[in-house]
Image 1 (cartoon, one colour):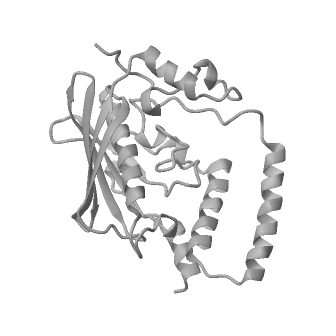
Image 2 (cartoon, one colour):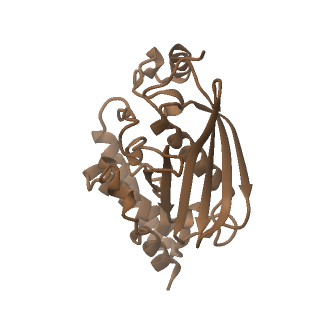
Image 3 (tube, rainbow, N blue to C red):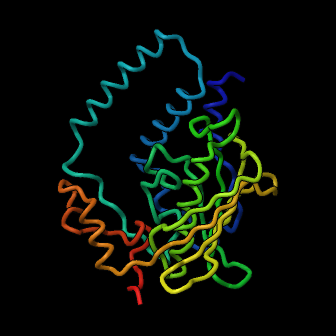
Length: 264
């Protein structure tokens, strides 16, 4: 198999999901076969090809010209402002929390995307399960997922795992332990759960598994924010073009919840 063929296989061969992936909330709406998602999938395909494939300069020059014309055409037809953010629903499908996420978002070409869903843990509380296959675009050491990508994945999953509990916040501390290399182009299983709360501090744990072996794990401490404090953060970092500079947002703390409890 050539590098180009392997890159194509990495994009087309999505890891199969277990039955419990749709048992609780059905199929996620953000993963539907929409025009936006189809366009994003082709960009993701190109990314894997360009990172993992080997091409003649003439072919790359021709492709660059074609891609430039396509980008110009899309830029000319784009509407005013940015695409609206979606308000996460704590009772909804976790895959739909962040449609434009660089980790789980089907609408983001930077995303693998990681598939996530909610289950009931051994203690009866909601927690997340996930499955992923990282392609060449996420490679660090040869044939291994980049450690920074693993850390980013944990930050996303830990924050998302807090949402169904009704208590979420902004990342304060993220600690990652790498037990063994995590392979690219391989089926990976993920787990994330909230563990306990101390005042405004929310604690969560996540792990990545390959063939049943833990390859990496992460612990996160999230800080619960009062609503006005969160709006102040949005206003300070906002873009006048999309309205967020006025403190208007559909998200909550960390972009991870539409409902949060004011600090005590």
